[in-house]
Length: 114
Length: 117
Image (cartoon, rainbow over all chains, first blue to last red; front, side, top):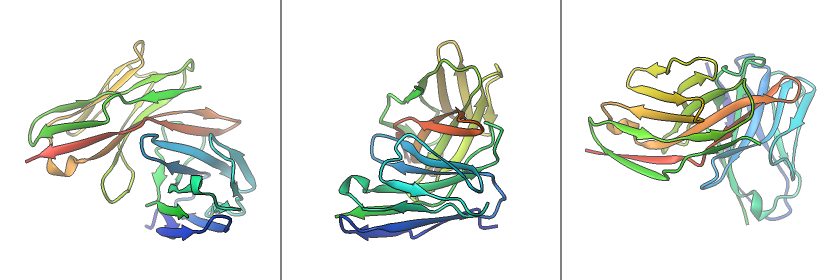
């Protein structure tokens, strides 16, 4: 049982480049989300989805795009990378409709923008 | 907006002893859950324990227990019989509804726990 799989684990980009962080889950979770982790700030919600074809913004959505064409996949796109996007990114999923359903996290992607 | 505050950036404990990590939150909502997550150096986020706002009884998971004080908006984590493997960053988190059927997990800043042998 793979759970939540994120790729790549590490990535270095130059300012202005674009890339996609991949996230896939095999638990049939309706809810998927992306967080970024910065020192001293905990994790902050970027975008989330409650099902295929449905996405919405979180706390820090600027500079990021998402789509949800299948239940399993929820990629995060950086259109024009900026140094402020240097961070560790986590994808997380859970069942929808129950606040107590724990989030299952991927192992994170460390992104550095130079 | 909801906020979660962990006022102890770092804590240390001797192996086999007990340590308590503090967490306070601010909300006007009545329906929410509280969580503690552990992040070891591997970077993996691991659920430690969760508490429903409507339940007055404090949650317990083996050596981990919480002291949930709803009126004071306090949610501390007690680790008993600390082990070397407990060394990690601990995050307190608050989950509330967002939008039509989504939700948001709001995290505190984290507390780095060191366990001394």
